[in-house]
Length: 626
Image (cartoon, rainbow, N blue to C red; front, side, top):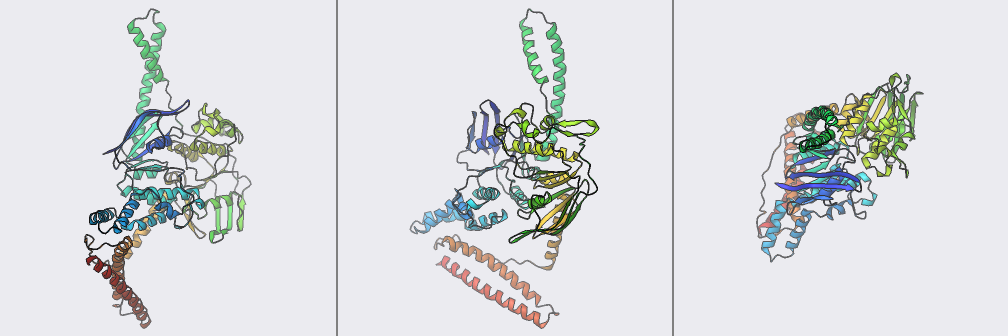
């Protein structure tokens, strides 16, 4: 089923043409990712699809009655509402269904309207809406439902908007960098959620594992042309490579033909026949193809950085805490030459603070930090670049350095570095304020690298960078001979460039893991599987059968009563299981008298609780049958 058809759309801003004549379709249950360089129009396409912008040409046709949700990078939320009020104030279909049910309860004479509202509640599982939104908010670390939106950080606002978008359950969900501001645990939860759920997605994301595991089609916008790959990220990489090889062959043929036609053009007589005019027109077409150049930005550098001494960086019993939270507790580590360490952990566990302590921007509460005399830090923070009015791209780089020294007396100039990171000569003389958010991040990265550090520290370097730039950065870092310390939630990036991890567990606990992110996940998964197996062998599951007459038209439970009725069934089943487990423990002949007394008290409490809940369940059941 086709939901959206995009036909020959174009977008430009003054003389800047982003794209022309783009056409594609979105079908039900497709999970599509749009891939392109920063500045080629990804966000513009998302805004056009979401109806927040209009194309300069072409049209977007929607299936009648389609519901669309759009998660923007900077969501627009009411600052006066609380977290919970934001959910309940949204344009959510479930909330409309609940409101219709409440209205029907106040008009008992209209039996047909009540029955229709009740069936809609059942069909959409609206009884559990409160539980659903609380669970999603909890997964996204928004546990304080009374917190004001105005007091939330940018990342928390993005996560709140994400919760709203998921709860709306739209026909089409449009996402702009959904994994930004999520820690690894949240990303993996969201990845699993999208993988299991039948939902139509159209997204822009730089998270390549997310692309691999969620998406079933990749659209690539490359030099104004749109290419479709019906598969995940691995399929895209494989088939893109084949496409580029074919284009290279075609370009080579075009160059040979161009040379041949050029000889003919030089020899042709002045009098032109119709046939020769046609051939001249063909010549100009061949010339255009032959001179198309595909920039290949693979980086293979031999950087001649300042030599490191025997002492690199030593941390001796370093501690750091804020009121109510311990970030580091007597942390010890001695960095060796050429180490490549990744830092992972939940938000708020102290990852960025650790980097600030290492670089001297924040003092530790106690402990000692010793930095080798030859160490030169290059620190990429999340703050980004400070823009000066009227400053051009090349001037920003030259403020920090003119070149990076390479081996054998060679050097990489500021202009060449910018070219490698996708700023062509024309772009280098653009004003910085004209750059997109991703381009500014890319420029900031260049300012750090041009200083030729021998200890590179990167705090979330992958945020807002497109996949092409990420591949370039990875190539550069693989060639980088110094020490590397990286905080990132990009699992693909971490797997590629680090060889062991600091895992920030919270409460000052930092685990040193010898491997990359995938190694760590495999280790964690095997540990969880082992625990589940042990638990499965030591306990038995019992299911009790309960029944309720939800289709009985003779009694109308309120929304709260119906919720209570549903929860009671679950609670009774859990208590029955607990009761059986305790009764089984009495069969152990080795129990002491004191242990039997403790078990007896626990069993008595469970039986009393079970009787109370069962009695209430019967009360509601009787009301249904009145």
